[in-house]
Image (cartoon, rainbow, N blue to C red; front, side, top):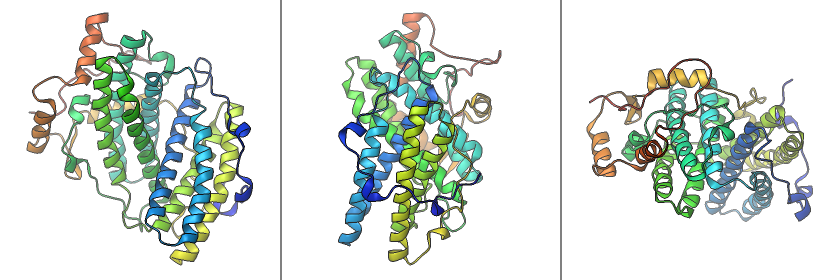
Length: 402
């Protein structure tokens, strides 16, 4: 059954404010909840945070007080939504356990988007990035076993493999080589715009999370690993945000943000396994439908355009969290040795990449390599979680040909 959010009305804005009792949601159980429920929570938190940051930026560039008031009213409700979503995360979970869940989101959400993306250039951007998140998951899983004496399989539950991806030390590129070509807003498929906004939001939230939790650890290797991967998340946000057409007006961006929130809440409502959490997704969807109509009215009034000119006439197929093991194995076999040059991708080392590597590493092994060495010293081997068949995990190898 098709669902067109432009034809649906939600909860009137003046009835969306919730009191403390309604905001005081019970967190999920880390030992019994579906791992993909936690992934949906993390993904939607990133979406809500991006909506808030965008709304603030819009307000800072807008001189119309009535528009600023409208943005502020919707933004306050979005803040309540973000608090509910983020507060669903398991209360006993450590920052490192949440980190592993963040990387599971990055792996399986980006892999799914890469599989579904119709534009070859955008698809390549997601394929390139997912192999790096895949390796981050592996590094953090080794750190987790050393620090907390637990295995990442209790978090990812065998849904996502934990094996080396493109080695993290080769992710450090010159900033110029992290900027991609944007899609063309006049020709890009509506789903491509939603994909770009979704993955940008997820990576931005990961970057912000690592910036805040990294220094809280006492163990030097943990602090160092968060510092290294946190810098790579900066590269990833640059990589994905540059895919969005900068020629979109503020009004186009506003309706795209609200439409994307409707898309994701609807998707996760359709695929959620926990009835209690599904009810929250449904409630938030009904709030977002009204936020979308507010944005559409603003677009008509201030951009003199109909939202149907830029939005899909119905929601695409639901975003789905599901295993992507075979797809990731294929990418490991074919793309592990890629790096970037300008807005494209190459397999050969180039001067700017080598200079960046020399400057950032300073002739020493980075934390991402040290954590594996320390794990091997302590346990005799690195930690990996391989599933489904006898295929060997890819060995850590040099990313670029010399």
